[in-house]
Length: 120
Image (tube, rainbow, N blue to C red; front, side, top):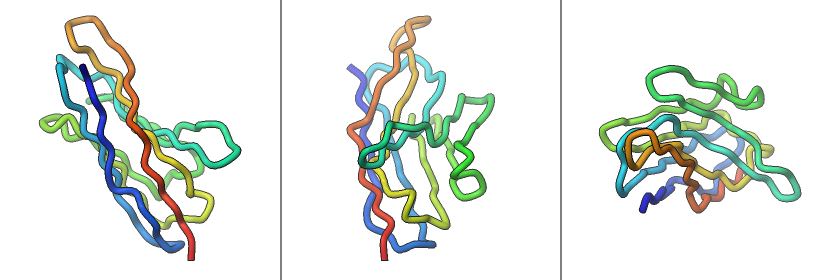
């Protein structure tokens, strides 16, 4: 069974920085993509950033230039470096990974979510 474990959330002042981490463990044959969504109170879950391994990265317009996504393939870990944080970045951040436990059998997995609060 594959598990995604997130860490790094917390309370930060506007303009500050945080780094989220998400490690995938279990039976992993290959990873197609890893990324982050977020959900603020009363809002729908939205894509923040996605890294399609060895190919491309995409960001929500609202975070371009402030957030950076990266993957450590050796550790099956995705990171989200967040800078110049704004109160509107406050949300629960969810990690996801589309990966195959066996060749050709890809499935999407989700982390449990980590709270990011931007407030003075």
